[in-house]
Image 1 (tube, helix red, strand yellow):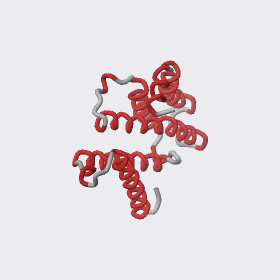
Image 2 (cartoon, helix red, strand yellow):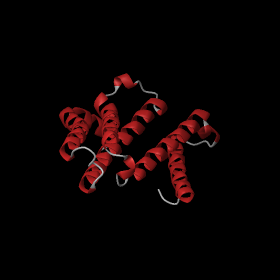
Image 3 (cartoon, one colour):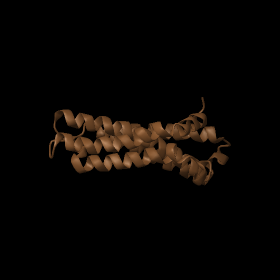
Image 4 (spheres, one colour):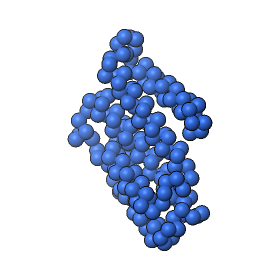
Length: 170
């Protein structure tokens, strides 16, 4: 199954996508009422928030990269793509993070620094790959888009290693 087939399949499962990506922000808001005020950063609840962050940020980051790749590299019109697999995870991620931010400080949530670091590294890698694509460096190297993709992955690993060396942990 290719990624394109997976997106078509996911686009056909509207109720599942809507249930998951609308359910996560709703559960986050509901959780605030369950544990009460100023108790979200206590032991069991901060781990639940951590799970919600990972459940929403992983597909959200994937959707951001997919949407950016479709728009900037494939030059497709985003008005012709299925909204649910492309934009719903992004909207769910932003809404869930905003709801959690109102309740708990992100520094109190275990693992949030790691997911934030991954977001920053993905963004930096995407910007570098986009810059290389716009500068047409692949023509100089006589490479293809696969070469550009491999170069982007190598730059991601190099950035990750650099962040580890700079800050000691990621």
